[in-house]
Amino acid sequence: MNQSFPDATSIAATVRGQEVSARSVVAASLAQIAERNQTYNCFTTVLAESALEEADQIDQAIAAGHDPGVLAGVPFAVKDLFDVKGIPTLAGSKINAERPPATQDAVLVTRLKQAGAVLVGALNMDEYAYGFVTENSHYGASRNPHDTSRITGGSSGGSTAAVAAGLVPFTLGSDTNGSIRVPAAFCGIYGLKPTYGRLPRSGAYLFASSFDHLGPFARSTRDIALIYDLLQGYDAGDPVCANRPVEPCLPELSKGIDGLRIAIADDYFAKGGEPEVFEAVETVANALGATQRVTIPAPGRARAAAFVITSCEGANLHLEDLRKRPQDFDVATRDRFLAGCLVPGSWYVQAQRFRQWYRDRVREIFQTVDIILAPSVPCVAPKIGQQTMMLDGKEVLVRPNLGLYTQPLSFIGLPIISVPIQRPGQLPLGVQIIAAPYREAFVLRVAAELEKQGIVSAPVVV
Amino acid sequence: MEKDFGQFVDVMAAIVELPIPSEYRDGVVANFERIHDVAQLVLEFPLPEDVEAAPVFVP
Image (cartoon, rainbow over all chains, first blue to last red):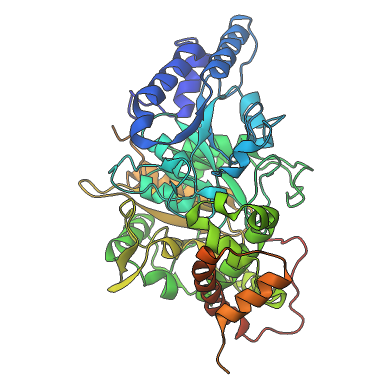
């Protein structure tokens, strides 16, 4: 762990042990943001005043002998689709800036604050989460800390750049078709997309409800596990939220990978990308001793079905604004949203029915394996403004193809962590560690094993 | 039968009362055609009759 940029677990330990005050930790984070955010353009709002007040409250609680929470004094930030009391929830749009400020925090933000974490701001994203690039025409492109001429990935690009640059030790984002895993891979950090319905989305601005997930980004597996454990728990405000007991993952990390049957996804997931992404998967597989291959049936159709459902649900959510003020949408989303309003109903229903069929096939695979490995992205982060790229010898459009390997998996809500592969002198990549529904502990155990072996890591880029 | 995506977009937009400014029309038609092409991968797949869409999806 870089001593200049400790992870959330380390920060909380020093604050709880009164080695350092919450105020000084939060002030240092705010100073980093003030100095370096102009380079990376991660933040759309910085909450300096309220963050310092909350930090003082943590310090006062400690001084009074109260338990300040397991994330005491840890600064964090959230994608700007999470409600934050007192500011409008932009969701990357110009339109939402006219809305009244949120009257309360999103449920996940509340849970983190209750654990002592201190919210320092809201983060840039693709408009209404409809994109993989975070090149937002209203708020500018976020820049990849590994190479500022390149995209962060999206749609949670502000969230991943802020962590990779060391502005905050952890953030929250959302993933509908890959928006946690794609930017986590491009920015070289950990990103967890839990099982669909596992974490409540109450107070988060949705994109396509059938697939919307929330989850954390961090620079260590213990942070991901700790934060995920704090985020778990039913909330009636999200009709999709599963009413399941909390299943803590942090105590599971030390179990290693004994007993886990690990396989590599072949066929669709072993082609269509640049050679280095498959090398990254092989590196991970070798470290885990995994040699078995499994074939997920029809992932290309799954991706197509996800595309149809997303276009339809996303468009429906914004139908009134599309009728009245299409000119106020980001040029990158506008025509896609307008087209999505016209999709025949039978296409949508067929795609939803296909989802059930496909889910059942993948469930069968998980009868014989516990973990599946696949690339997170088909290439390294493209340049900002880049329209086309070469993939597997063919020139293709950048934007629709970055979710090649993520979209068929979020389609059926599987828990997945994208783990960061650092390549000295080259841009980072990510590998998806995939498990059956509600087996977050399995994916985190595998990630922790890889971290222990030094195969994956997320050092701050300075 | 040749599919006229421009005509579909014009008619459907009128029926669902979605005005599409002329400067966006080409982009909307191109995007609709893309959705159409992608959707074929799903529509051509023979699903058993007893596969239902779930009101709340359970993973």
